[in-house]
Length: 111
Image (cartoon, rainbow, N blue to C red; front, side, top):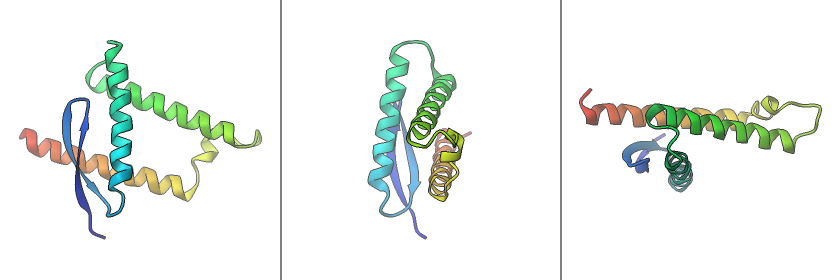
C-alpha cells in the first residue's frame, strides 16, 4: 500500500507524516484537534515540551475511556471498549504515523 506525506503543525512545529491514501482529511482533522488541545493546555502555563504532550495525551486517553465507558453497558469496563479490531487498527495506524513523524523530525534536526 502506498502512502502520501502530509504536513501538519503541532504546537508551532511542522511535521511531515506518512498517511495512507484517502485518510489525509481525517489525519489533518486529528492534528488540528490535537494542536488546539496542546495550545489550550500550554496557554494555562502549567506544562511545556514533552510534559505538555504527555499531559494532553493522558487527558485525551481518559476522555476516550470515559466516553466509551458511558456508551457501553455496566457489565463491561471502558478498557473492553478498546478491545475491538477497529480501535486496534486505528492505534496501529497512529503509531505508524507518529514513528514516521519522529523519524522525519530527527532527520531534519540532524540528530
